[in-house]
Image (cartoon, rainbow, N blue to C red; front, side, top):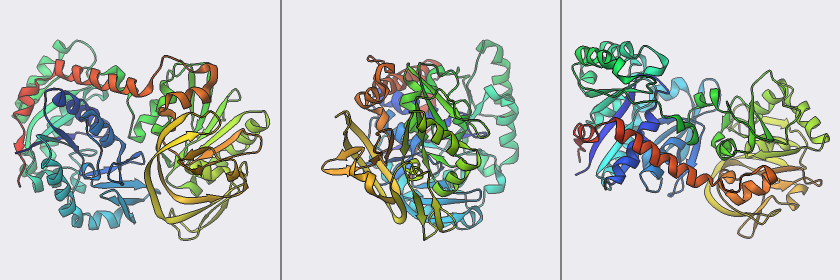
Length: 486
């Protein structure tokens, strides 16, 4: 019978996703069949699954760490923010509706049966299910109809480890305070606490561990030292963008405007990791660097509103100037649509319906449709002949004369578009830069011939597993897990 253990946090970005990924790899190395699970996630970084849906990027990475294919059961409810107060609601990998935050909060309890069914589906093919909570476990204002944290834990009778981040300060108060504000029945599910992201001499925190155990009456694991190589793994939370390109150096400069609703920004991870690349994430109010060799317009969850924001920041002028000076521009998914002549959303799929004038660098027009294409792809980049393994995840169709010069071929089907001068390119393919040969073709002499991105991710997952094995008692942690109720 499978067992389960849930990891909740005292707040966002305490390291829950990374901990679960590392434990997936460590426990799999011990011979266990491990399945990651997150009942409800909120992210615009998503991955296409083996069963033809989409889940949060973190759960796809955790599945990879567990050496199994990602499936929609691993993240049955995914919220993809579309505006300031609303999200696209994805259930079992498929778009079900767009809702305001208030409407979703009012109705989310109806999704609990589907969440529990997905959890039990995973448990039927695993020795242990590692469950990740969302945000803060102490958000008592959101406890009613909760799917993400204690609402799920109570419904599925799953014990909890509460994780705190010592790097941001106040970890003792965060852990102890969580027990103070949540309901006693929820606190009773917490079997242990954990201190994460420690830097310095761990012996200096011995009294802190004792204080936490004294006030919570449960064991405290850790402190787990800071894992410096975490930046080498795909990030999911938009909070990661705050330091996304710090320390990025190289002779080849790539500029990426930080759009308000940027999505699937993990497309950029292989470029950020490439030793010869200087990746610049341009913040609002800043100009695109004049020395950029390539400008990339990333994916967007709200393409027309992000296009308006691009213009408000003057980036459209910067991009036009970059192109006139001989620079190259690549648009990915929503960025591809922005490069065209127009984007029409007659059904109001991404907000208020209407049509927007594009940047006009590609002679194509895009129409947003209700049907969402979710599919992994094997393609060939036509200019270089290099293979690409990527995926489609979009709700639009793009047509026009520049489609006669496709960016790639997916089997025998042309994909994307290229301008007559060859310096403006658009594609719906995500994940393309993970292909080493294609990435080297795009970067030329700036690419490191000995850098293999996918191998780097595997090595980092192995290193993360070894890190946790060194600083955690895995046997004691496993002993906290309970059998899954049938």
